[in-house]
Length: 408
Image 1: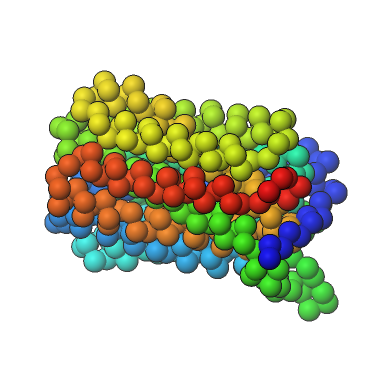
Image 2: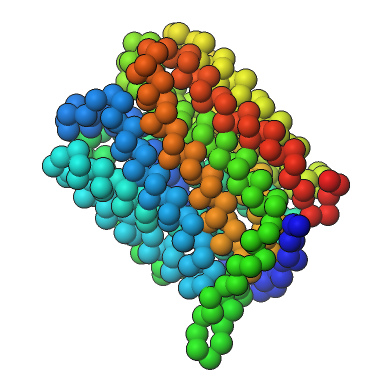
């Protein structure tokens, strides 16, 4: 039986203009960790050459990152509800930035893989902290826009990394990109610690003994959160499989030069930066729920992956990229905006972390799978058919999610 807790709105937060400062800082932090994550895609070929790693072996680095990221999400959401979103967001960003700097000085593949896992282990907690802060500071009716702005971070991170990293590598080396973005993450973390306020429910229930551990039992039987988690697994299978492998697949599979391949992914991401807040605003204004729009977007994502996989020239890739960007990204703010309504405000951090941990399992598995498929078949299209399976399953599962206050 699904448990739908009624969110207790933070009265002081939802009426305060400072909520936009909170949103800005949450967005900036999530953008920074997204840049850190997306740096691997355009840098991976150079890193492989420098550290003596095969094409298929490059997927292990990405998988190591996402293993840490999944663990971080699963535990980070609980810690957010317990210890406060500000502390978790700033701390995770600072330590992840430190390991980015260290990865930029990796002496060997083994050490590099370990650093990637540690980057992911700390980077993942800022997502749940951001969702919790937005839940506290924004009403349910306006949360679609806020989550849409927040979730532009993932696509903007891809845009920044693919616009900057290939040029940094040409100018200096792949190490420079990791040193630069790692240092920037650490500076931003300090700003977040100084400026973010948790709000009424930000540090969880308190007693004379201090913050109390959240009771997770209301989440245990929540069928709809489970389905949302599994559907997001399918969506991110396609999204992060593309982000991780698109540059290398275009270069190795179709002979596209690295800078042009990076430009294709930049176009892919720019569309999402604009469309995520827009889809959030539209669903807020319509007020008919977010389940059916999510199903439609995931189905569109399947189609665009198959079309992109059939292309062969740089011009064709550039034409399809913006449509693929729509499908690959705008389901995420819709899904994230559903989480607090399904869990309630008190457990929003734990619910966000748990669902994203399930979502990110797709990111853990897909890099190795796609690498093996391409290595075995040598087929660019076969890799994209494999990517398309994920959002297809996600679209089917979303049909069975029940939104509070909406028809089943």
